[in-house]
Length: 421
Image (cartoon, rainbow, N blue to C red):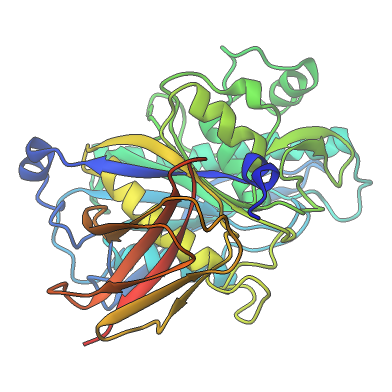
């Protein structure tokens, strides 16, 4: 029998998308392909110094970022995403193959994508919760400085042709923590004393790492890969959209509210997500049940115990971000459990798709829906046994999402399926 307890603990929202004709016609990039598929085969990479500052030991550091763009793109305004590497705030580099790989993936879909330097904890200084909090404040200031650099460019020379109304921030692990604090922390919020002290010690929210204040900006959304925030109470209605994936057995940055490896408590993506939903913040979250901190990322571990989990998340995130960019309404429908025991075969298939529910209540009425990459439902049917077949009909070849919902208890799962040529 399917576990309702598991359903209650490990859920994420699937979203239906209502298309806005006005936004489609006013934004020529919203053509149904850009942002969803790799419409560009080549990218270019430019390195710039966006600032400089001193670390906790007083050592000066020049701060650089690599700007990755679609090579043949002629669009005058492109959405931009700033990404920060992981490494526990003690190690890492903007040029690691994973960050550059993510940047190239986003650029191939039509974004300007940036991987940034940020200050780390000096290796020779003792690490404790106080020093790490100060380093998080520095990293936040550095990312904000990199954003101001690009906003200034957009308002002056416009070399990189970014759309300042579509700014995303994200990263992996420590990089995700950095992005979360850039998006959801400011001095108008009820900050804990220890957080406020760290921010003040390092020069305030904006800091002085590069382009000075005056080049204000708003964040459209956050792309958090195994991230955390000092407190889920930081969220407010109308905050930036929240997109996240996190392992439920994470021992580095806890999935929910717990103590992290540096000894202080915070909220991981698992407890941040319900807080954003309660406030009506557009949110997408995937819980990888049973996984640790980074063992499910395909780009880190091509062979792992959770194959396809990150790829499925990224496909959903691409659709979600495209909706944000194109101004289309996003509304939650129901809860999804990632580890629902469902077999789908053959996959890819040319015509007939078979599905088998390995563990479930077979007397329950089930609803199946086939959804294309734009979020449109293209087929559906009901059944009341542990298996069913779905015919391709006249559907085009390519990627689809098969959603199966228990109509009684309102839990469901989603699987990627492919129709071959």
